[in-house]
Amino acid sequence: MKIIFFGSDNFALPSLRLLSKKREDIDILSVITKPDRRKGRGLKVAPLELKDLTLELNLSVYQPEKIDNEVISYIKSLNPELIVVVAYGRILPKQILEIPPRGCVNLHSSLLPQLRGAGAIAYSIIRGYTYTGVTTMYMREAMDAGDMISQKKVEIKPEDTAGTLSEKLAKEGAELLYCTLKNLKEGKLTSTPQDDSRATYAPMLKKEDGLMDWNKSAEEIFNLIRGLNPWPSAYTYSKDKMLKIHKSVMDKTSIQNGKPGEIIEVAKNKLIIATKRGNLNILEVQLENRRKMTIEEFLQGHRLEKGEIFRSSKTKEK
Image 1 (spheres, rainbow, N blue to C red):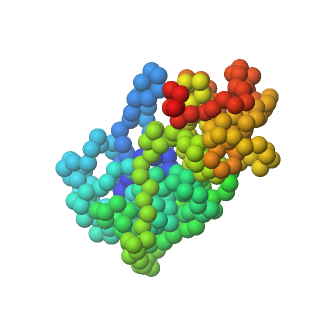
Image 2 (image 1 turned 60 degrees about the vertical axis):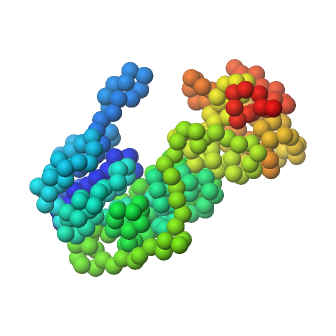
């Protein structure tokens, strides 16, 4: 089966790697990904990891700035039977969806119709889910609303972050996607319309989504920290400086109470912060313009005292 593969995020890497090995079933005509971007302090042009993998696999790569008539003509010229999309990050227009005779199949990182949108992995943790999964579906113009083909459930463990969960879902998703394409080729595929009344949404994350509200419970803040790790990171303010918090655990030993955001215990390797309900033990932090540190490393060079308040803004709140 001749396919075109759309992808950009690292979530797509396991899928491309696996499909490229299944040449008896799948012929990848081209990989379409986003252009190389400037990043880092020197703003050097850096290729996406998906592009590097594409070249390593000796596949053709195409990196358009936008989806326009030139891209549509390019796809038509290849005459694909199917288009596969994994974490491409752009909506494909109707003109492209109508090109392949077998349609367009997308791998999505949730158990649809729950968590439609780009932030599905992060929000599954932020909202306290104990499991999520991956879904293959036929694409249509509405976001993540096409008929579902197959799903695989994946447990969310208390130690999972968005980063670790993404790796698990990407691996499971690659296997599910290959099975979907194999069944499609063999004519064994069935699909089920989504129940739109059960749909929930997970919008694309922004940096400001990481601002911590200590008036929430310890469990809610714990989930926020995990869900925003590695990006954009949960953060608060300590002595007018932004402090990212990368890792924490809910504290079940301290019997002290305090105001939301108040330091109720500080020691050589311990920093306990009060929330509206329960306390949080901070394990890994990063002060603005500094490297990531364990709490023990951080406290060696930064003096914090019991009673100090972590805040939601640089200036002292009234």
